Image (cartoon, rainbow, N blue to C red; front, side, top):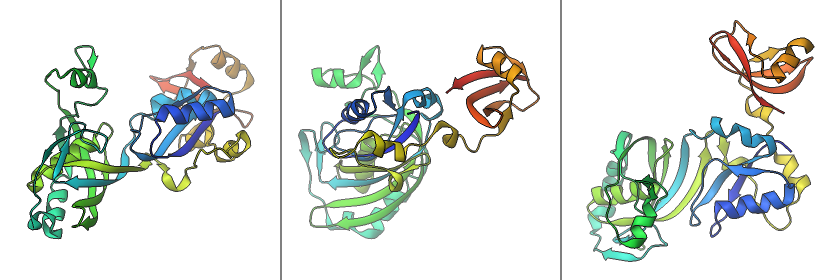
Length: 286
C-alpha cells in the first residue's frame, strides 16, 4: 500500500499514536507531514509505504483551522492544557461583534510571529519547551507568517469565548495567534479548542476516523495513490531502453521545462522524475 490517507485525528491522542495504530494495521512504514497537539483534532495526512518518499513535496502546505479562543485567562502553554498564570476581567465592549471582527481582520497579511515557549523549535541546540520546563529564559526568534483569511464564526458572551476560522501559511502557531488577538482586543486569552480543516488540498470532508473497527481493507479504499497525488503534473513517457537507464539512476536528456513529472512506460505509472537544466533524473520509483 503506497500513498496517503487523510485521517481525522480525535482529541486526546498524539499524532504518533495515530501513526502507530495505522502502522500496526498496514504493516508498512507510516509517517506524517506535521504533528497536531493532543488537544487538537482534524486533518492529519498519513504517508504510507513509498508514499513516505513524497514528504518533501507536502511539508510547505498552507492550512485552515477552526479555533476557539478563551478570553480573560492566560496559561503558560497558551492552550487549555497549561497552568493558569493570569486572570483578567473581560469588559462587555471587548466581546462586541464590531470589536471582535475589527481585531480579527487586522491580522490578515504577512507578519512576524513569536512562537510559543512550549514548542519544539530549537534554539542553541535545545527545544524551546526544554527551556520552558526548566524555567530558563531564552530569546525566541520571530518568524514570518501570513494570514490569508480570518473570519468570525461566533461569540459566546457567557463563557467569554470566540470562534473563528483562519487560513494561514506553514509555520503559523495558532496558540501565538490567539494570544496576540486577545492582547489586541484589550485582554488576555488562550487557545481553548482547535480543529484543522485543511492541509493543502487535503480536507476534513474526505478524512476517516481510525477506530477499533478499521482494517487494512477499509484503509485501502481511502488511499490517495502517488499517481493521483501528482495528477496535475505533466507526463513523460519512456521507452523500455530509456526506462532501464532511468531506473539505474542515469540522467536522460529532456527538453521539458524544469520541474517534477509523472513517469510512464507503455501507459504504466512508474513514479516521479525531476527535470533540471535539460536533464531528467529519477526521484521516486514505485
